[in-house]
Image (cartoon, rainbow, N blue to C red):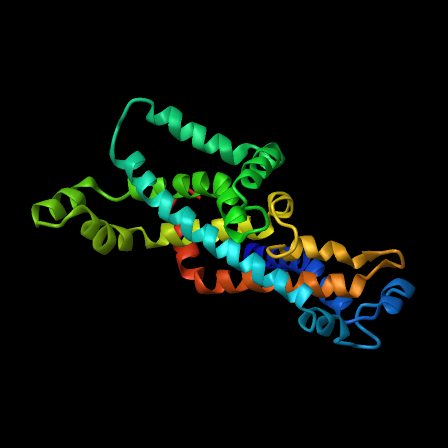
Length: 267
């Protein structure tokens, strides 16, 4: 009886989560007249015109390309910076280590609006406005602390004796870190990379402030659906569906690392 109740609760919960996604897909396959004219659970006049509008217009699909470029750049930079920092926090004790660790986390707690103006002025002076690297570096502000916090928990679970044994066997630190230590925390790296990717993918304020045309992300381009004639609901829904695909692919490829990471790490 208890197992049946749990199954019913889980089924209802999954349905509750999937309803918005289904409704977005439903709207993306309708015309604007059908969306605004009547309520229906499925498209009565199914059309792929909304997707054709996005995939056939460079000003639309380049938004996805721009977003993927700076998100991947940010994920690589964040993990590369966080790995040695997390190792230092997990293995060494130094003056102010706890305060520095807490300060890193406070950067993640601060809203992006606080840093939008300083970043804009700094990157304007450096001629980095409307570049992918500008957004990638700006997102490091909140992704690096998150990655350090996640990786430090995984590294703390690896015995220090492994480090000492590797040094006795003649391993240099870079060789030990790349060939022995990183495979031991592969699940943690997968979890950290997943969160860095997702947080950078969905962030809008900084990416919109620091770009104008050449590096404009899809989230900012989606505001083009508002015009004098009203909201283009079908195209907006189609764009929303397409933004779900990169996240779903990332979850699929790192699903094993995420599952083990949630079970073993501090996340």
